[in-house]
Image 1 (cartoon, rainbow, N blue to C red):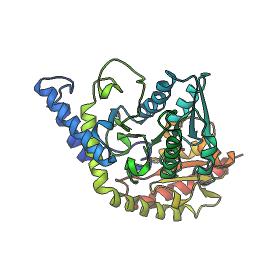
Image 2: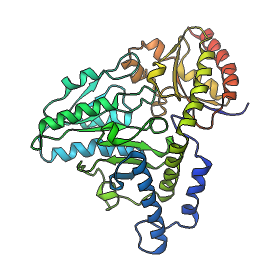
Image 3: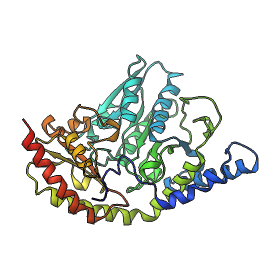
Length: 393
């Protein structure tokens, strides 16, 4: 059987149009963008063009766009950078994040919290994986410097009320005035860029992260948007690149690819969204024919390409491995937590009992999937679930 790739939330295939845009900077214009000779300036030109294109996509200024190695680095710079900058002046700071964040935020916050100088709180979520925004105002303290809530959850696809969070943070900042401690709002928008509006002014965010390899660009390139006036302490040193925020030689081919990918997202968003939603609806109707199945999250509160399903008495890792033997790629939640025997922290936060969490899989669609794949997928899935249930103690 032909490979079926239903793990687009882990990574996407590089779009051929993106690869074509990258090739000149791998072979001919291979100069270091920091060099002043012609080859270097050719590379710098494509970086500047990409910065303008990303800025246009985010509706921000070009100098507010920082290129990184990916969203994990972007998240680290955002969270650590804000905290470390404030700790130069204040004795103790406070962070608020959600209980369902990606480890690239969650683990950073926990690590910072090991110090007596940093404290944090988690926003709870409802049974659909959407934060309980009414809890936010009470969690904000006088020394809260950062609220970091993801735009779309990577495991269940739940969309968060980013605009409302932005309004709350903005009102607190206004109340504190010029003399008080500034409070900023960061969002990890990795799973949102393909399908949702990322206009930073509409969202009301001060920092925003995303990664190239989730939008049909290569791995190893990402973006951190930093609103003008937000001060960040660098988390690495060794160069003046990226406005002294992120040192290191720029990944010019990757940046060229990301530039093209962003252009294609803007061009194809509606078409791609309709396509994956049609695939999703057809697949859901087929999966619901299997007994003891539960969809995690509510469709109208999710992006169209992520489907998280739990099968009672069928362990998720076993489902993944048996499907893989049939050339079908899916995930058990986040690829970044693959291999963990702990139940998903996202499903646990949503109130799912362990027996349902352990039977969860994430199916995520993309630009290159088709409805034709649904039939063969279900034809393999149903017997796999039955076999695992028959084997279950």
